[in-house]
Length: 92
Image 1 (tube, rainbow, N blue to C red):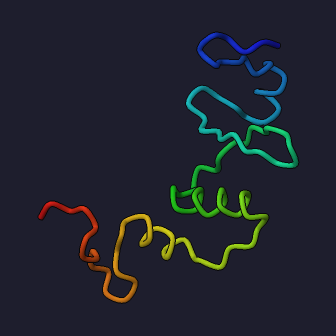
Image 2: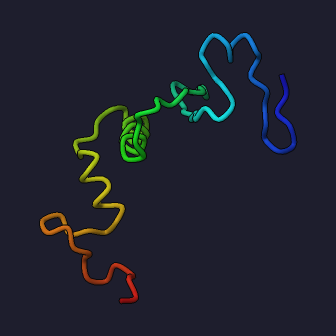
């Protein structure tokens, strides 16, 4: 199997059928143990959960923040109040 000049690859029909990879199915690429793996995303998986899972993959599972804490951090919110911190780049 070859990767096209656009970075595309065809998943064999047998594998698509076996794992229910239909057109429009969301997948993600993850690196584990020096290998690249394709994972089908669950329909109820949220963006925040995906970020936490990716961080767990990168850190070997040693992450103590909740999804909400990570989302607040990425949004630049004050942890206690939910308000944006001063100097967050918001032009007001």
